[in-house]
Image (cartoon, rainbow, N blue to C red; front, side):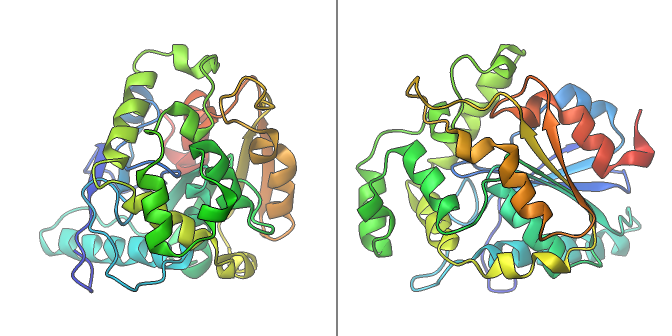
Length: 298
């Protein structure tokens, strides 16, 4: 529970006794609990932590009248991590010190904001497939994928929530994942994604509406130069043009977006993942873990 009384949904994987903690920030729309590759995670001596954002899964929605921001979500993570470490110390548990953070899609914004606002907490970061945040790009990418009109996307919260509630159910295309994405052929991937989307819908459109409102504020971008963590910006090299109707678009996945962030983040570099598309997080999970937990590679 956070200081304001909001409850948080928390999922974990890997070794709970490991001193190396990795935080995974999920995309919009997506609840926590999605492990990109459980076999690899179990083999790597890390503790993987995943939190539901407000209105998703088991996390309480924001109170009426609250104005969400990316920075607030980053601070939620920092508060939870600090309290978790205090509790672990009190019972003689692991003292994890600094952490690694991974953000998938728009979750990369939260990951980068956490690193910028809490540089003493985060030592390594990976953002996977994060669209550039110039203009309203983050919100527009999500809007197109979930079939929301431009007018509704910029409407007040009540109208936005009604429009989302009347829209189609969430599918993999809502995340820009095409049916022929090569990572979907891996055992269990499709089922884990479908469960993540189902969890994202348990409270109706509350979580997505909160995310879309948060994307309107670009204050987190101004803080990016404060990041001191070693940062990887990872993009698949097989971006789709959306012609198959899947909702995937090149602008959201192109490595050029990574260069936009690289110019703003010290100690950052862009990686193009061979043969990968929207599920780069899945197909290159081992490489990602090697960055956020380099001294612990099995």
